[in-house]
Length: 465
Image (cartoon, rainbow, N blue to C red; front, side, top):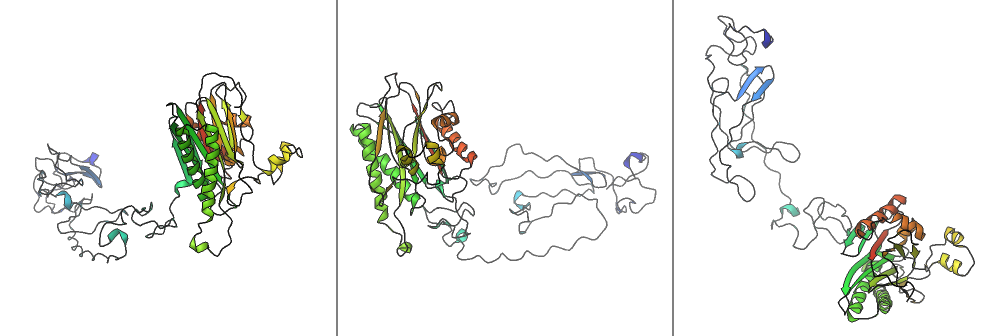
């Protein structure tokens, strides 16, 4: 029967407020036993029943002062919680429960094992005269703990200090092959995507969309010249995929070249000479890798690690470029009305064909042999011939230093200028991110690495020094 048709003159059930007839021993709506019925109490019940399945919770009692907590966030032991007030709809006092007695759920949504004193939350249904349910059986004992589980080892401290922790289970130690010893999850490589920004230079490197690892590497830094003026350095290396351990080669070359440049510039060495010496130092570092062979590969045929290199130094109004291979440097003026320029010439089959006048540039780079390099760093290189060039731009601009993973999608200087954001001089990291995104949007078939160096000098005569 709907509550809207209930007569106010008839007595009602103390449980569901269903109208009663004189002499009723049980409620016709909910079956409530009326033999001991009493009048409604004057206080506010915890649950007010408005009808079948409709409940309205009583507002909780808020303590005047929040209970203290332990360092872990759990309520402190011995806290006196305010007692529950009032009675329920049958006149029974509402039981008080301590916070630790309230049942909880684990991370899967299942009930936590019961503890002495636990209670069941009341279901939002009308009371009935059915007999009470039998007591719940005791919880099963906890499963045995594996002695080799790193999360519950005897020491209780998990992997040793300094060990790399799995990103999946957050408990197992990561082995030298990049897999978790506990759950077997493969860990993401740190070199898959790298970014670095200084106040006047930034670089971004990305694995790309088709390679299983990033074989590029970069280094960006700044130094103080003997007169106190700043010098900014960017080095980008591209591992030769057909060689053994190309990722190690590019990392060793970029780090060695950067260290050599910083030391030479701080000693007052001319930047162009410092660049030449840095490329030689990078070659020595890559050559040293050929003498270190992993034990499991001692009896396998392997060629020497190899990579390309391109570097840039901005110091005292001078721009110095050095390279071996097909990684490139571009100049893009801030005023896009001025012409951009490519500052390097590839050590490649295509470049040799064009230089010899045997093919046009379009024909050479359309050939499948176009990207075969003729110069690189490595123990099996024909000979070491570092290329260096110095420039004195007459206007501010940006230097883009990159691997072929970028310039394959912006080969010409005009194309690179169009891909470079107009505010690159003010936001070099953002500009590098945009250029990497340009390559990924174009297909990302190779690793992509780019460094962006803003160049701001007083207006001077342009030319090569």
